[in-house]
Amino acid sequence: MAAPIVKIEQVSKSYHSQGQDTLVLSNISLDVEKGEVISILGKSGCGKSTLLNCIGGFEQVNEGHILLDGQEVKKPSKRCMMLMQNYGLLPWRSVQKNVELGLEGMNLSKSEIHERVNDYLEMVGLADRANAFPSELSGGMQQRVAIARALAIQPEVILMDEPFGALDTFTRYYLQDELIQIQKREQTTIVLVTHDIDEAIYLSDRIFIMSANPGQVHKEIKIQGSKPRDRSDSDFQHYRELIFNEFQFTNKQAIEYNI
Image (cartoon, rainbow, N blue to C red; front, side, top):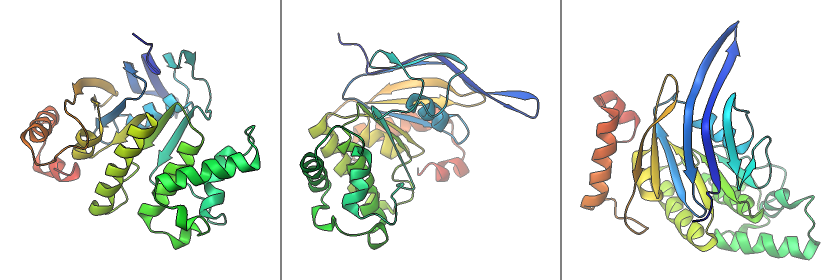
């Protein structure tokens, strides 16, 4: 069996503030297989985004190790790209130039860059908006540009931190379907942080539920069945109820988590 693309071994992370250490992550271990989509699900403050930042090399762990394709993660690299809610597009650059951004400095000719950018803009359905600027695009289109930019670099792993959280329901569903098709074509490995239980079930091969204070992996759930999934079928509802029960929701919490 091939080694996992991401290996997290007994990772702990704390922050020092006002003379006191606060433990945010405690003894987390999990593997992510190549071509897999996993979701990290948990309440606010459980350390989901901190863990994602550690995988990407944006923050360093205090204990344990994180390996990307067998090499320890010590700093950010183009092998592992981050997508966030705010898209991160440069407003003074066109769609074409925003997607080119990650390719600058790579050993590619102008024609190779142009061809690669066009391929990925075509993939996300924005080839006809290559000369537009971010301010001329909807939120959903801006997120598709951000996805194209990440894919154009051809990273080993894409990290997503609530990537569709700021979008309306219909746009979010549309982009979830787009992401499934793109991931199937590219065999991209994706680690997704989300508050949305339905999103996690719809997109993921496995879900890791985190508990808080400090953040720990509480449960792993393997999601059976092919994608795209039917949100109304009994299997989907089974996973939804299973996760719902894990969190022991109050009515207030159920609203917060889109139940």
